[in-house]
Amino acid sequence: MTAPPEEKADAPGAAAALAAPPRGALRESLYFALRNGKLLFGLGVVLVLLGIALIGPLFVDGSPTAYVGPPASAPSGEYWLGTTMFGQDVWVQFVYGLRATFLVGALGGGLAALVGMVVGFTAGYRGGLVDEVLNMLTNIVLVIPTLAVLLIINAYLGVRSVGMQALFIGLTSWPWAARAIRAQTFSLRSRDFVDLARLSGVRTWKIITREIAPNMSSYLFMTFILLFGGAILIGASLDFIGLGPADGVSLGLMLQNAAKWSALQLGLWWWFIPPGAGITALVGALYIMNVGLDEVFNPRLRET
Amino acid sequence: MQRYFGRKLLIYGLTFFVAVTINWMIPRFMPGDPVRNMLARANVSQPEAVAAMEAHYRNLFGFDLPIWRQYLNFWAALLRGDLGTSVWVFPTPVLDVIMRAVPYSVGLLVPAILLSWWAGNRFGAFAARRRLLDGAVLPVGYVLTATPYMWLAILLAWALGIVAGWFPVAGGYDFSMRPHLSWEFVGSLLQHWFLPFLSLFLVAFGGWAIGMRNMIIYELESDYAGYLAALGAPQRLIRRYAFRNAVLPQITGLALQLGVLVAGALVTEIVFSYPGLGYLILQAVQNSDFFLLQGIFLFIVIGVLVANFVIDIVYVLVDPRTRAGMGAEAA
Image (tube, rainbow over all chains, first blue to last red; front, side, top):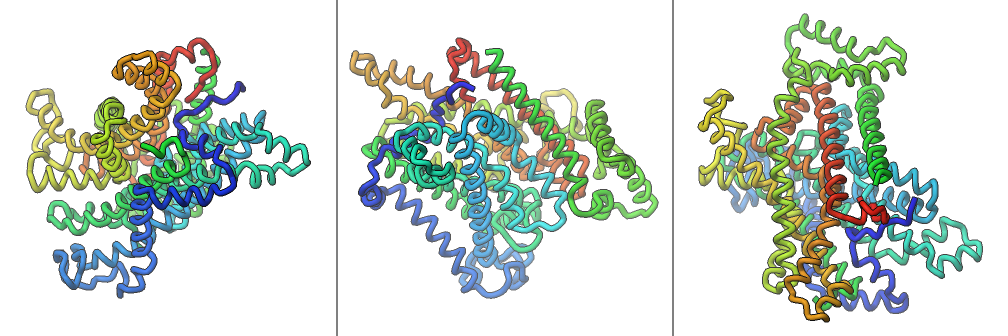
């Protein structure tokens, strides 16, 4: 195989982030991070939502699926976001659903990042036949439409849970991350400090974790954020098709129920607006945070 | 160039092989008896009908044969175009059920993908480095790409369909009509098509606009742009060159995004009860119609593979470097 193409699609920020001096780099990043509006805004929204998901369930009483109030009542002091057609409290569902959504994002995105890193590092560092085979695998998983695979797996799977969903999302959404990491590793592996480590007899795995990974840590972190957001969106789509967790709630399931029981036709806007708004706010904030991070780590983007 | 296409075709061939194998494996290696599961969850009441269906599906799966025979038979049936029988509309062959839905899905997806790509790129390129516009494009674009497809679809259906009453919100054409060729029917088709199209278009548009904006800024900072500017070339010319370079990764991006776009179309169709593949999936899931689900899976995979190949050809046409064999196999 010829030398890998320079993939422009892979965050241009990475190259500059690689060149950042190690000493004081953290302090410098922090300096710019605290002055970056996009990063602060995105992080703020994510943290607020995380707070709701973490401590919210402690403050609401009753199960999210319990029938507590009058059916189809508009938002009021007692039921902040109104009730569903069956008298379930939308706010309680939202709080628990947000928790499930975070869980799918963190587990699914985390697993995808892990697989992507292992494949990307191995392929990029080893090169040769290993690279060839892993590349082929990556390309195959990349082309197969993820949702379609998840569809049949989930349909046949009798018991469905948030964990299972995250597992399968993680196992199918890693390819682009693997390719991006591979390209970065490729450009790093012939640097002097890596050669030096290799000459001193450091083992391969240690070179990857100690020499290569830290030099693209910002890039890896940004990849994780994107995978996190992606996992949330895929999870929500699965829920909406009716292949969500069989027990419990999630934001996607709320949307599904609202659509299924014709909340639109009945005008129950408080049933279908909050869950979608929650997902959009969370994923949008993650993306905007990523742009901010890119500017923090990449000096060339800063002055704009 | 031959090597480029050879490689691509090899990957697509392998992908198809893997997809078919997954399709074959999942019902056989998942816990439980697939036939029993399927019929238990399907809503069939008469016991005789269930017995007949069970016999039919046992025969289709061919569990009494050795496993390699089952696998070969599966391929043989597939190559004959036999995807099994639907449970939901028993005993219609799955292929027929799918074929009725495919035109709707294609009619929705192809215009939405092409137009959003084109418009998003144009708009993103225009907005880049223009203070006011850029400031607005960025947040709006990111919010749009972060929107779950079905949610935007629900919002549009509610706002433009139910509250404003401008568009119908369910079905592929008016329920009182039968499909035939007349202006009235075509008008009804278009009316039902518009909202699903719009919601797909908007979400995808945001992503392309942002991608293009970032790419153009990257290109405008490159050496050739600086050189042109130093020569005193007009800004418009520089931007045109930047656009040409920036569009290449966007073509690659289109190939990468296909799966996401198809997924978006599926859930959008469900919101609007639009009679395409997405709506079929919902029916298949609700009725535990696994054969239908698997058939749709194969169709989606084939569609995405064909689209990928078309994009590869376009890439070669657009980027002369791939033709000259200078590497640049970015794909």
